[in-house]
Length: 505
Image (cartoon, rainbow, N blue to C red; front, side, top):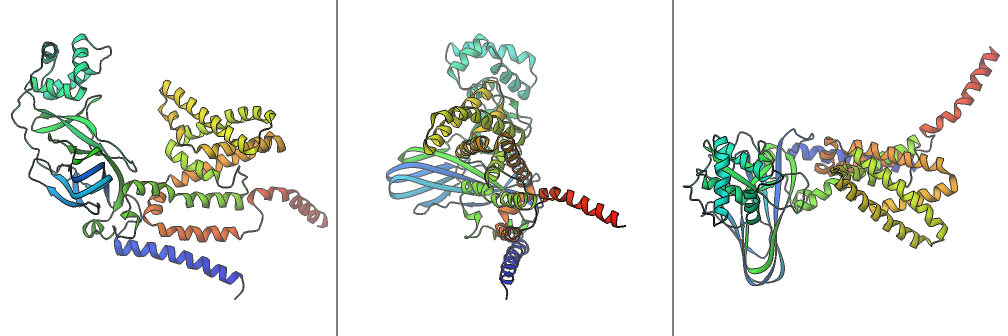
């Protein structure tokens, strides 16, 4: 067998193994090949951290049953602790116990939810309204606020909306300013409504956003209106779309209570996945040796990491087949990965601004004759300063997109500025524009491909398909012919050959 034979055999083996394993998992486990083909599942993980000193009991309030979300499975991967769920109260509570525990402790509670619009839970009627009286002078201020608002409202919904508008009106009137000095917005809103005889309660909500890590609960308000609870944001008013809002706490017990520990806190991570109905019923996808078994925060990280081979394939095609020159071999992949965080247009603008300003400042360093290590370190500090200034300016101007500049890898930017500066001195500005423009073009193309929902879905849910990418990269790596951009150099030869043929005829 020739040297080419083993190579082709290895490539074919990689491709068959990757595609075959992906197809087997699709057929056997029911994992969909296309995103959105099956039900959307939210995996929510609560991470409890505290410092223990002896016997420990930890209580975590769990979300109640609610319309639109159906609980598929629950787990508590916390070795060494006893676990039980207390359902005797109005809301279930997770209960961890351990006889002896010392030092920093970490407990986990995982919850799998399916968004199901057809899943309905009867609203729990509120108890009799017993308003908590205000002390003076706050009682007088609250009375004057309600006296002014009640005549212009018709029901609980409109009254809540008007109070929220008054709370967020700038400048505040004297009464509201006095009340807000004493009470937080959602607490004040609840007490004012209860004084008016309207059932209201402060609740904690978890906004569901794919790939988010270490998030906290958000304070909202529920108001009883026409036989159901309406959700209000104390800053904006009625929340009409609650599809991605998970109600976590509605009753009075605290979200987290730790006995025998200090410095306790709870954070939440979440990730969305599409799974088949059969897979949800049997739980076959959450095997012990798979990405699904990792903590939610790490899964969100791998969603980005597993897109890197896709960007590597784009770089290989553009450099080896097309002939695009870039500043750095795989720098465009990291830039494309950053574009996924910043969005394309703000990312391009931020990148061009930082590199341009960095090149101007780098020109002043040439006269100082610094050694390479010191020069690179200086550029890193300069890049951090540029990014910080741009972030502050963007915030002051109200440009939220501009603040995402912090997602750019600082060291890569520093090396890019250094490399382009040297290239400017040795080859001139034309070569800098060619390589800089080539890097940006490849990064944009990689971003377009990596940003496709289907590509992201396949990369994370079928990681074995990366064997197919590896096979394609190996095949392209053996190509030794002309690049696409080199063909124009042979246009003159082709014209001369045609001319000679015409002379012969």
